[in-house]
Length: 87
Image (cartoon, rainbow, N blue to C red; front, side):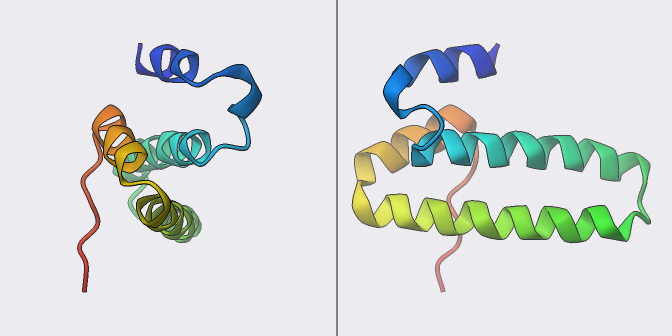
């Protein structure tokens, strides 16, 4: 499973505070909310919550890409998410 392999790849001392782990948690929440919103199309509060989580994840990924491109590319590949469009 993706969750176990990803969590085991992060060492114990940097689990909860690391950018990678936080992005992983946001991605997990986004995937759960996406499946929920497919069933409940008019759940506007969940839509708002998902937009907020998407914004947080985008800011975390921008921070990581500025600090360390190698870790950023590795994380994008592991989570199967695409790179955000730049303006």
